Amino acid sequence: MAPEHRGEELGRFLRARRTQTSPQSAGLTPGPGVRRTPGLRREELATLAGVSIDYYTRLERGKETRPSPAVIDALARALQLDDAEHQHLRDLAVRAAHYAPQAAPVPSRTMRPHLKLLLETVRPNPAYIVSRSMDLLAHNPGGLALYAGIADWPAKQRNLARYLFLHPAARGLFPDWDNQIRGCVARLRALAGTDPDAPDLAALVGELLLKSPDFAGLWERYEVTGRKITTKTFQHPQVGNLTLGFQGMALEGTPGHRMGIYTAEPGTPDHDAMLLLDMTARHNESPSSRQKR
Image (cartoon, rainbow, N blue to C red):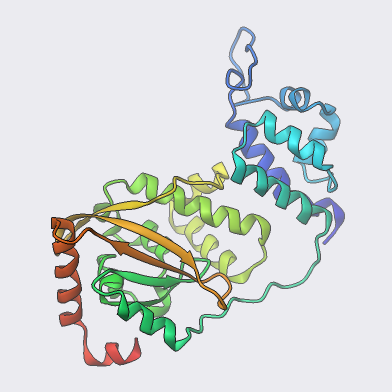
């Protein structure tokens, strides 16, 4: 890749965060009249970070690929980035300086047998395993049934990000759908920012940009952190409303694969609904689909 293109992703992130940082929050007093630029102007951010406007402009246009750690930290302070955003900015700077033009391998979809057994052992708790791009790789009965309607899609099409934005049942399933999709896009943005050529991410993002205006709008904002979700509420068409605790965890030996497990306190209406979901989902499964899973 030509040097002038190495810093494009770094520039996109800086531009997105700059246009979403208000002068007031940065400690500036806007002058009279209507501002044509949303958020901070380039010269304002350059001043706050202690760099020249020419240097900052080159950074934002992707033409400067070796900003020092001190410059990156100064920009993070001026943009009031949180810890995760600050680290993402550092990662983008490292990638811009050391870009190696090689094709990224497609992560494996292969599931080890004992992981599928683990999904069964946690029943009736809904549980699933996803790839880094949120492909649904394995699940127990409740883990599939919880996402109402996703079973109607072929197995290779089942992806939690695709479900959130493109399945007609998703908006009705999540009362906080707006928060769900923001967190989803932030996760994909963080992944794609440091590995933009990865085929699995590029294909999914390209599809959602084309098919979902909601996704396209959030993608443009370039947020890389979302609300940490410890509980999720569902308005499920089969078992009614239920609020479940959620825990996600990385799996050893399968890079990028994560397990998600939902829980509820025994004896509560939420636990009863979770039990009912597991029983009805198991009953509705065909023998052939059980064997495949």
